[in-house]
Length: 601
Image (cartoon, rainbow, N blue to C red):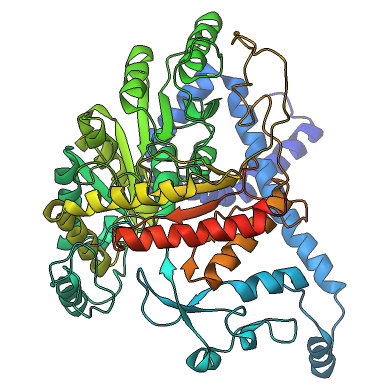
């Protein structure tokens, strides 16, 4: 028998000892892995995850390596972050309680807003304050009526106690959005001057307040919706002749929520250059591709900036680029808030159908003011409301309430209930305001003579103001919003009139026109404010159309506005006044205009 070398015997004995030493550890490790596998398999969905990992590794092994590296990098980042925080904590200077108190006493917070200038204090001092109930003939006060209300850096806020004894003045209100007022119980079309009779619907609103309380205390999709909200949605759809409707608690959030709910990145929006600030924000939030056409220019043979021309060019570009099929929308207003212009709805519908675009129409100022019973553009042009894909409206402008609505097909409204940010995250409309809006709709149907009186008052005001040479009325002849602008001087010329030719037009990708009109915003706004102050002293409350410009003195469009808008005075005509009162108020505005502007030009 051959003998075993001594070296081999020692190595084998050492390996046996090592195996016996590691065996308990290996058994424990195997048991731990087995228990971990059982625990992992007990987790719901673990089989799906394992199958995903196996298939991913089989199809793309490099991806598995990349995911492992990313996991290790994430772990390293967490560990390094904790170590860094510990190292920085060691370098902190430890202060005593007395030193902390001294630093807090010496600290002066920076102001949230820059300090106001003397001109800003003067403007705020002249802002009318309604003392008592609001209405077509309120009593107001400001620093012009009572010098004790003047503001200054030493006195930046009006003391409420001063309003109890301040001098007031009764004025005719042409500044508030109170376009229609139902007859009082006295039976007159216009509310009597000293009538104390409650308006129709007042008792119902009070009963709602006592039953439901003030707030809604929850979003509509959770527990904020109650029976009065559903009744209002049904009343709006029935009034306008659509399938369904959805209401929002804020007027500003309506358009800025509806547009992003349907328009996403890659979709196409073609919008009027004159759309209001709310619509601009809605389109910005949608992140869609935006194209612009000239304000209220739908179809013309001598321009390439009309809606029809922009859509035609878009179709050519999409075919040339072989772009994928996407959603396409036309966004505009029925009655433009910034200019008072009116959209030709039949022409708009024909263009949209030709190029297969959906229409989002904002009728915040046309519903409740236009048409025989206030149904807006669809009633004015005798077009079924179902022809318009989405109609947006405000209950705060023409319905004496608050919030907004969107009406159209049932599918469109139900889509917003889970995809519209304002509907999902904001508190529901208070029951009191829902009832008030519902009562206003009933008054539209019950008292159509309000709209006849409103149009008579509009014609009376325009007849008085239309004869002033230095004044230009921008609004449509039936618009209850009357924008007054300073007429631009045109130098006399003996050159023959050129025939219209096909121009290159404005850039559709920019909201700015190619040759925008030039006007001195700061100077014109100062002049218009003088007209407002002069009219107030003569007993008529009017206002400038306010813009969200920057804080610089030149009033360049550096703030929230996308472009500079022509300064105007905005009149809000109401049926609550008689025709003679409207003529009297228009005469006051006319005299103030001539006194301030005509003599300074």
